[in-house]
Image (cartoon, rainbow, N blue to C red; front, side, top):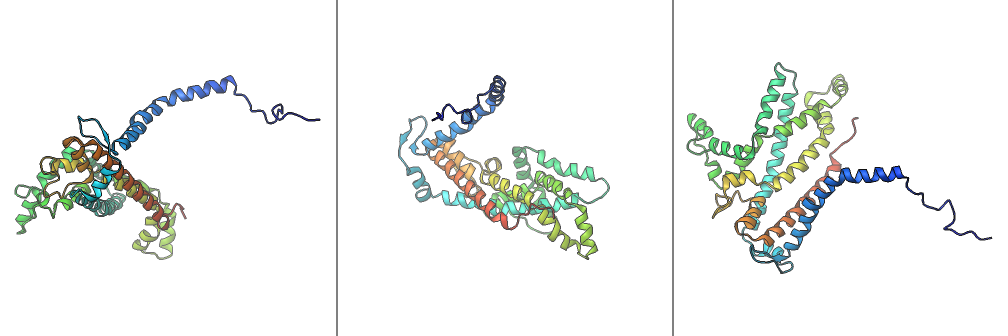
Length: 314
């Protein structure tokens, strides 16, 4: 006595009710704006730039397939590309740690119970609200070698200030100083993390005789390590795409990233290739290399962070 498998009610797929179908269609309609934006503004441009990166596409000429030549030329025939990588690496591996340390110190100060605490926090966050263009123009004036506030203050005490943005040696440190002035967003995130640390842990450590320094290294730093990882990753992604301030201060004319290409960061050089030289294929190859570098650095940070990041409260 044989029974057909298709006829078995146990293996038969349940049909959707009309209500479930309506809810599914409603869900698609509500998510349609995001799905359309994903396809139109992210997926399609990525696929298009991948194709353009394998072509010689100089506007207004039509793209012509050349394979991997753009990538080979970047690493073997472009004399500016090593300097671009060095400038971006300098900003990433020196500037981001400096900003994190400074932001954490400011957050520790703002976390102290002092009079006017809200006012101090408000004053500190104000520089973050300044647009990048205004920020670059302000600091180009503050660090002006002749008329700037910093060099005039140094001159008053008998010290000759450096050329800052006008010096190939001091231009990148000047960028880092400028960005450290506007780490209010990092500080606020650190401040929220510090307020989330259980006070009972500090009380128990005090009973055991731990000093303030020991409490910081054994309690505070481990418990805010996930926030540090988040800010480190987002900071690295930002630094690899650094553009606006470098464009305003270093320029993108006949000698982009002046002085002597010391401010020619990756984002600025990509812009020069795409919109000054109209070499879209070459710029598309640069964009994909930047994407690969960013993904690789992020992956390495996530792997290494397992050794020093703790997600346990105790």
